[in-house]
Image (spheres, rainbow, N blue to C red):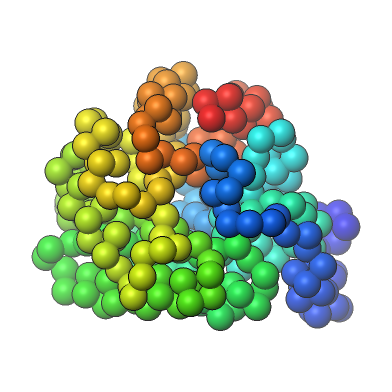
Length: 291
């Protein structure tokens, strides 16, 4: 199927989504059984976060985004994708997720820039839907803001999600931060001490941590952060190239952090899908080389 056919198929044959999910060839064993993971992140649009670098709507064109994702997923060494239901289903219909890891994004209610951003409700996948779609796990964002009471509801929601996924033997990928508001906008604290606290809270969520992985940004003293847990860690790569203006420096940061025991791979999205030179394949290949 071509990208240009997706809307017609969705309109005329909505059951094609479930059929594509049922037909998808899955990998054997748990996600970490085959060595370091390279996961492409594409869950940003579902939170209303469409910007990359200086362009506030870089991710707005769905056909363009899907074309970039198909390019990335076709590169050697890429293990899979992380996205909300609409994008996962587009990729299923395009038949590009065979033998790839597919991780469903779960809490998308904390829309970027809103007054209720910390109240990060589960508005996308739940554990039952992830299992029914034969996905390989679910991911959630946990921002702990000491001054915002909505943090408690998000903690509880994440704990239920971790438990629900574990009961089904599925990966729970938690992305934790300590956050606060600066001039009304939520900002994550990226100090070693803040990340160690976030890791410690996230690792204790749910009735078991047997299937829990953590997705963490590269921060100073990263060795101390990873040492705060025995859970496997995937490095987080966000819009860092656009902010820093130096993709080589970003790659070197990932390369150093990959040497830390406990780090089991990389999750990167906008940095690889929207590189400064526009060459998605080359950006993905450079990240795979880090692994």
